[in-house]
Length: 465
Image 1 (cartoon, helix red, strand yellow):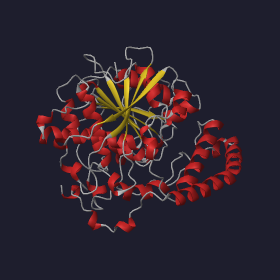
Image 2: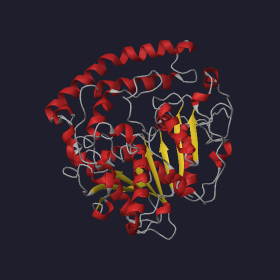
Image 3: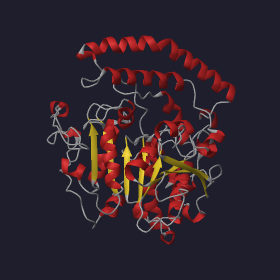
């Protein structure tokens, strides 16, 4: 565990990016927004003209609205993240997002709670890294629940057998708020369960670099246990960098169970990962016409996030790059001897497929919640029965990702490595989708049986029954 020691002295602190000062931030955002305004109309016109000819569309299945939306989103991110990291969230971190709640959370309520710091006995191995700067703190969390239901305040103790969702939002580890996206409001209505959104610290300074995020998620998890929720009734959901942190939390809980069995932390009942970031061992993926992600922010985020670790840790630690290193035996063990939903298909590496096989897809029309899959060629995807089956016991894993998103190769490696270690994984591959395609599908009103949003909703229902 040498890579887990706090070794910031091995790096020159002046080379590690931090959050900019307020004047610099304002200047950078002003420049970015001006650039966005200048380029907006030309980008819309260009994308509209190229969409007219099917051969020049970013993807053959995309509508004009989707083509324009993805291009404009990519332009906005490029302009606003090119020059620097964002500012630290400040007081807004402790408050709900009233605007998004009004727009997407009709008939739901939100209650902000301050969760106690995680206990010292829960802090071992990697969680001690950088302890000169990073330590356990109070954590900003938010309960979301359906109004008029069984909960009056939202933070009541768990009822016997009650399930709960712990949600971790994305945002490249440095942005975002769990209440600034529609997921917690919609998940509450879809499942009828309470949602605890954990607003972890953003990796913008020495005191908020990893493992600060892990400590904050641990505090949220411990809080749920203290409210009477059984570990097997906790469903973890994370999108993008939030998916990365959910994976880190599950790995750490397994380690903590071994090192400190008296803590009785258990393992969560399920993990739902939506386009999870899972490999920091290589530079951020370059800009692509088939996704809105751009590399500029993460080029600064990676060294900021990992500043308390030797540089090689991003290549050798599964806490940073689970798609590239480490074992998933801990998840297989959690599932071992438990009722199985379905036998995984034989594992076939992409390297074993010919180029023509990789490109082939069968356009199978399937039922809601299923992917368009090629069962012969796309062996990273579970058969139809797995997507519609009832989850069994143990820590179940469900992953949704898209075929042309920038992270698709990393996520496929993650799935391959999980299955190679004996982990049962339900996979929903969205053909022609982008990063976090469920969010795009929701925003564009795509509600058909191939909609990533419809399929995500179906998975949330199944795993919270």
